[in-house]
Length: 403
Image (tube, rainbow, N blue to C red; front, top):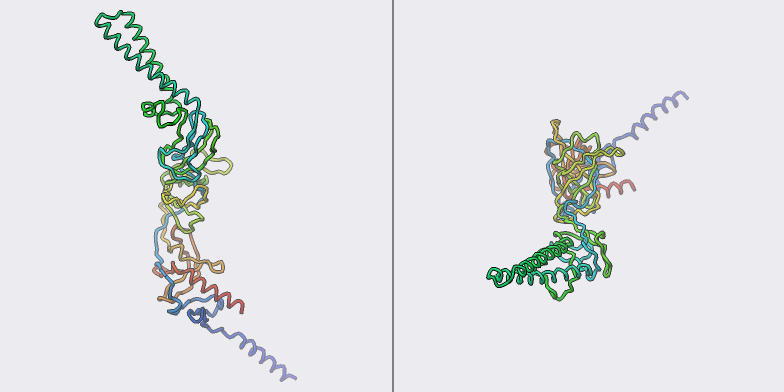
């Protein structure tokens, strides 16, 4: 009985010791033997290296960039929104009431400076133009009569009374002409149009007038329909020059000491992820919102391509000039892939062979990002093609988990 007890005690360690042997690293087949994943001993389902065969490389484009050490300025990140440049925005309204006869421009149309947006018909305008034409004729006749009487008076053919009567009539005609011309100018009729004005000009009634674009831009609002009566208080069109747009943002009170007008900002919108565009902080309000403890600001960015549309939300990064400059390891943000909720990069060992590195990220420095751990200065990380490597890694990991 005592011998059996000792035998049992000797067998137990042998059994458990044999069950704790290290798992050898293994090479897993991927995509029909076109790629292999080498698995480390300590983490079976997290391969540390991907090797692609020449067949797997066919049709795939891989680009790499070196991990580099660079001086990084501190940044402040806020959210913002794209809106039209308020200095290049026009609310187009008539100066006199009129009925819409023709409407030419639609919402979103690109228009040129001076282009007709709509034609309106105004009874009041027609009356003022008719009065102006009549007064202009009367002035011409009064001038001729005055000049004739002045000439006859100097020749002592005409009496002084006739001369003074002609002079008075001429001066009254001048006053009437100036008054009617000023009345037309006040409702938006340009001086050149008055000079060319005729009773039957271009076969259009005197009551017709054009709503025109004051500059080239885009119709961003349209509130007019055929036959509608438009008053000076109405805004049938809003025109915006969207070649530049504003980024509206709010700066927290604690950050104000570091912010000033003229600083360079970078923005990114959800429609174009990882694409950062530079702009300039052009205005910082003087008033602090007591509820949010923020100060409103806006920045201006170039938008000739039309990619940034008013209403888009934006991520804004403001680099702060500081004496506390530090050197950090940087890689392009396109070199980072999220795999199983962990930031991962692929380091090229040689063409077709890539090391899988888990990395710890620091501050984004668009278009790059700071690396705190996981990469070394001078290593080549995959940018274009990193998603393809991620797909291979995920496919094999899922397959291993299902087994």
